[in-house]
Image (cartoon, rainbow, N blue to C red; front, side):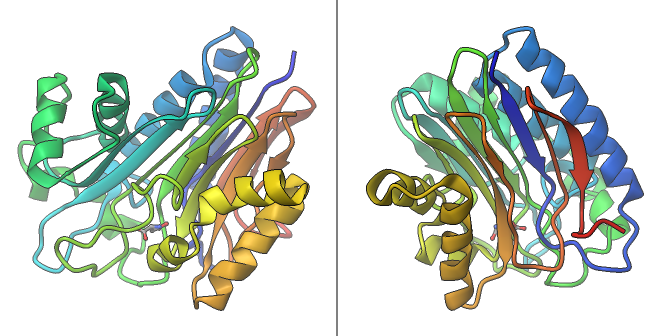
Length: 290
Ligand code: ASP
């Protein structure tokens, strides 16, 4: 029985910051996610569940932990993709919905479109019955408590999974970069930049979104593997070198169809957790771990 699950809580970890709470949260989620996969749940469902939990925790710059844009409001981005048939759903600059990943999943399930933005995304999410944020200033309270004032702190969340049925899925959710302009959309909701899943590999990215858009990072991992016959680890390192060439920093998590895992970053650290049928759960922020 082959399966694998990797989670990330953003590539903006700063040396000297205490991530004990985030690590405990990731440890709990990776173990629960592992048992869901062992029980036969689909990669798509486990990815959706894990990201929703990360959003709701308020411990990352996504969902409840999101930081405000330049005019004080909260616009969030998310996307999800299912490998076998490349069904995908994304929401950009969505307001007033607690779980952007559930909103993205609703777009995927509806099937008519891949990405909805702004008011349309919010209307669709409400129509799908998703929970709303009634008082944004009160709900998005956590960003003050996780050192968010520095622009280098990327706290996007993401998940990639391979289930026991051999299917891959990937998803990503973010409150975006700090001090972003109102209306700014990063790589997270862009299928092929922040998120990608096909029959070869599932990828979720975190970092300076503009550089990840310019390099089509998530899709490029798959392209290098398929066209260049490059192994997973080599492909993920090559795409991060491209990101760096465009002055970007960050990281990504990836799983290939054989259950191999890769989670490189070129920032100081990346909150991450992984498990597979060959590997007990690991939770790390820095390398070597402090
Ligand atoms: N990639 C995200 C964005 O640019 C930020 C992050 O990963 O923290 O919106």
